[in-house]
Amino acid sequence: MNENAHQAKTATAALDRGLSLLRAVTEAGPARADQLAATAGIPLSTTYRYLRTLRAHGFVTDAGGVFEPGPVLEPTRGHVGRAELVRIASPSLEQLAELTGETAVLVVRVGLHAVCVHQVESEHAIRLAFRIGQALPLYAGAGQRTLLAHAPHEVVQAVIDGEFQQFTPNTPTRENLAKRLASTRLSGIATSRGEYSRGGVAIAAPVFCNGVLVCSLTAAGPDTRCGPRWQSRTRPVLKRLSEALGADLDAMPGGEATL
Image (cartoon, rainbow, N blue to C red; front, top):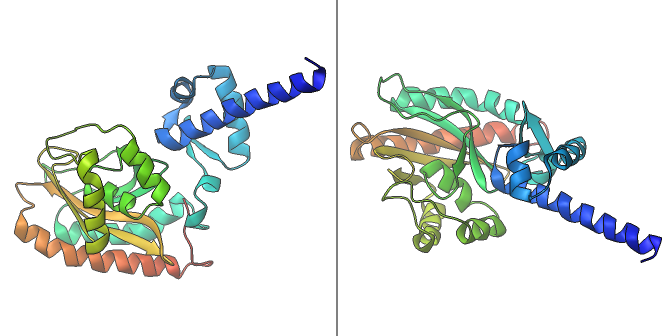
């Protein structure tokens, strides 16, 4: 093998490793370098080297050693970062929690996962809550399913073709997920009952900026408080607040939002 052929082979192998790592970043959700190295099947030292390069070019962000897709991989969300989105959405979350009496949650899509980026917890002693930065499945839960329902076709297909974990007896299956997504798009509101957490009820609405989905707003609580009457009261509140938040995002300089 001549020198040029050897260099080409080496470059191709490096590109394969880099693409494997990039795919691991987009599919794993927030993850540490050792987790990404295991997923991509490359040495940890090589993973760190590639992550530095990917971060320098905007493909990856690093939050205290936890890596996730950067702005280059989410081009449709525009020009405002996650911190700005949380700042703008905070009043809507506070109103949602006050008007429904339950936890209000802001969720965004990162690759093939949903991520909780902010919440205002219910004042009740028994309540539903998530961890900030927690990666959630896109197929289980109202807020997550709302994100998936309005995601690009290739994202929807990747989730349907991927692994499904049965968190509860009510977790959607591969066979019925497409029907649930169609129903979510048609109604504009998603409702889940114990899909991700037993005994939990959640209602979610999408938030659009110039026609592009940015995040979902969710009200979530225990089924002992969140029966049919609560759900009926909550749906119009969510619709109003999600539309108002979308209008606030439209009004930003550039009129777009990205995470």
